Image (cartoon, one colour):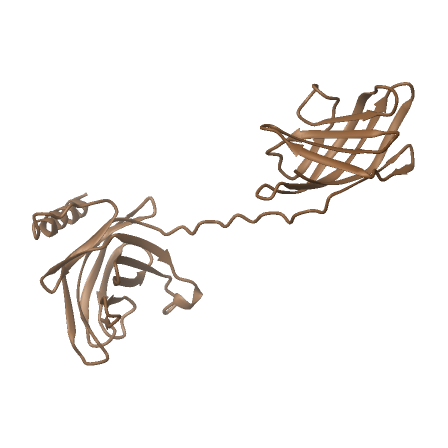
Length: 278
């Protein structure tokens, strides 16, 4: 607790450097030479296997302000890390012109990670970094970082492939390849049909359906419905619908189905496949 209070006192010291500074959470800021550097982007990220130094896992703590950036490569976790040539920990400053200054080239300083809590880093820093181009120097003093979070990359949405419009099944063992295939979507359901001059098969399921297997029932009995008509009405006794792909962006869904219907006779619909573009 005492260390944490010291960090907060350091924050107040930095804030006193300028009357118009507003401290935010998260934050990474310090005095560069005589000018306040207050980043508007901050993050911590775990380096990959190439970031191992002497079998020590490193993290990168960074703050960005426009074209400027401050970056620390330090061991994972809390601790006091010296910044100097050949040290595990390093500090790098890149100015708005792209010029790089590093403690790994005749620099010195220290990073103190006071607390790592809820995947957020809090602590202080100071360093002198040197440019390898012309040996010019930059100084950072009164540096603090407060509740800087780990960077979490967004998981890209991977859409299923679109399917070709199609419909096929066997009705009591006989192939059914309807010339008319239609699909549409309302606010809640997708409805698709395959029909010819003698038979009509209709499937309906939720618009937000995900790949998976669902029990088919008659219309109005559940959200996963089938209907068969061929001169007489039938009742769906049992059935299965399997969604194998659904591209929500383009409105393209494919899958398989089978069901048993009872009417004037028993109808067995098997080997059903469909591709609906709604």
